[in-house]
Length: 293
Image (cartoon, rainbow, N blue to C red; front, side, top):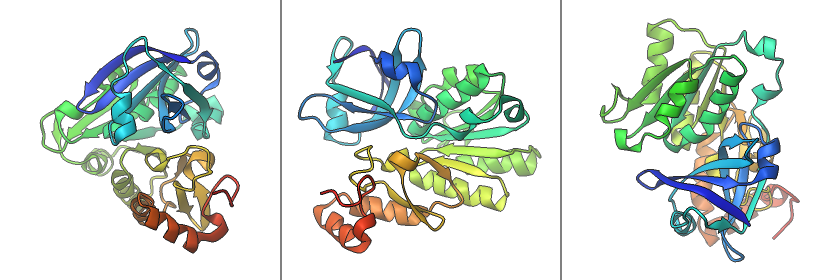
């Protein structure tokens, strides 16, 4: 059992939890995720690691209510426990394996949309702890849906916050802030990391491609099973079939076929849709074994 040490509501339908998971905290890296399961019959829920404390053995997760399982998870409180809490899973952010001296020469821009702020935070924090400052853009629909703003201020080189309705700082989409920084202010970046809703990552990638700015996206929103066995997160990257949970979740945003992935995500929600996808995709429908039922 994995004890919940802290349970907090951050915004409407968005919750944060600190969970005692010493083994995961000891080895996890930014970009990786865990799979939480509330009880023996509970659904497996993949969630990107928001933060970790190696000394105390604590993993921080942030989740949004999107269905019955996450709504039930939101009722858990301090002192309750998860039946299973598995990880770390997925590939760590690529920059964690780079030479630090070379990494310090790079200028990085992070773009977080909505709950995507949670997986962006540990990456920016990791860079900050290694003496590397990165610019961060955080976007949300309204001020009330912004999360981890104060925490992000402590680790970002420059933080730019924008809301769709203009209720906090800037008004507009994150793409408008990117244009302002690069085209108006003349800022130069070597790489952009964008994490948020699929539609946001699509339009960020379209813009950064025009700007010739290499971009990494995290496809954690399309993960379901988290092991590559269900095939839900099958995506085309360039000319190759990938699975977000085992090959990613981070990929080259300029190579991801977002339209295909979003359409597939909708089809996967129904039994008929799954059957159609299995027929079309054959042996590549599943990721882990290629043939599982």
